[in-house]
Structures are given as structure tokens and as C-alpha cells.
Image (cartoon, rainbow, N blue to C red; front, top):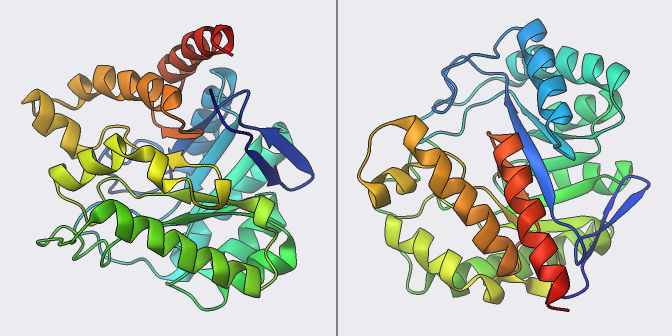
Length: 284
């Protein structure tokens, strides 16, 4: 049974004890590892955003900077050029929640003004000292993700004594900081950052001990879609072969207490979540 978890996003409150959310990924980058820059133009990005909403995504997560291992940073001006026209055009067409995937306060502010209501920060508030004050000021929702190192270095021999305890402690630390800045605790969610500064064994340990990551009873956002650790588990280099295990994990992790699923393949994950939740409702 899911514990009671509510997530405040703007003027909406989602009861995640009853229904998980699918967050559809919209990469507006030329070098995404998962989609090879297919949605790099504004027109193609908007078209894809509308498609994933039709397929059932409750959140569209727009990002203009690749965070794949080894990725180089992108200047704020370039990131703004990529994402703001997309957010503006999507907001004019849909009422769906829009998230901005950025660690820069300048980009987050412009995205919120354009229509985003979630700041999804892969640095968990550490990359820009202005981002937590901005989230508090704008009353946005905030996803605090854990990452060891940065995208350029994160997969160079990541080390932990106990990865689950260390990630949970990071959540507690950043949660306390967020509250000091005046962020509404109901607006906060956590993401353990699967694949971000973690080995295969670290990823598996985090997923196996998911219940230990529910700090302050806040929602857990999970992103395993198309991640390289899946390829290692199934011994396949084909991107298409990662779909089935990722969908299986959406179902399994929902049953284990995860709340929000950040995915590329929206329709398949929506269907998996629907079936899983139908069964879970009968166990209450």
C-alpha cells in the first residue's frame, strides 16, 4: 500500500498515494544519448511534446542541456535559446504541467515565466546558489536529484561507503536547505539519480532499497528510461532493447513505492502504470 504523499505543483495538488505520474522527456539538444537530437528544432520539439501529452504524460520535462556521461556544459544563453520558445508554444496549446530540466537559475526563471511550474535540477540545488531562492520566490515545485560529480566526471570511478544511506542523507541535507530558503515542503520531490555518478551495483542497490529513500515522506522521481545499466543487465547494445526492461521497472517500482516516472516512451509506461495501479487498488 502506498503511503499518503501529496505533491504541490503550482496551484495543483497531486495525490501520489492514489496515482503515479508519468513525466515525458523532451530533449531539445543536438547530442542526447537517447534520441540523437531528433527534437532539436522548435517545431519538432513542440510536435513531440504534444504527442507525449496525447499519449498520457501528466508532466512534460523540457531540457536544453545534455547530462549524458562526458557531456560538456552549455552556456545559459544557448540553453535559453533552445528551451524557451518550446515552452512558450507548448503552454499556448496545452494545460499539462511543464517542467524545466536545468541547474541554472537564469534558465529556470525564464522557463517559469514562459509557463513551467517545476524546476528539475540534476545538481539538487548545488549547481547555482540562486536556484533555491528562485524556487521559493516563484512558488514552483522542485525536484532535488542526487549526482556524484558532474556530467563530465560522474562515471569516473564513483565511490560510496553505502550509496543508499549517502543519497538519503543528501536528501535530508538539501531538504533542510530548501526549507531555510522558504520553499514549500509539499512542493519538494526527490530523485536518486540512477546512472548519475553510480555504477551498475550502486543503481541496483538504490532500486532494491527504495523504501529507505522516502525522506520526509516526499515523492520519489525515478528515471531509468534507456539508461546504460539496462543494457548491461540484458547484454545488448541496441537502444530498442532497453524499452521492455524500463517498462517492467515502472511497474515494479510503482509497486515498491515510487511515485513519478521520467520516461522517453510514454504510451508504454502509461499502460504499465495503469495495469499496476488497478491491481494495487485491490490490495488496499
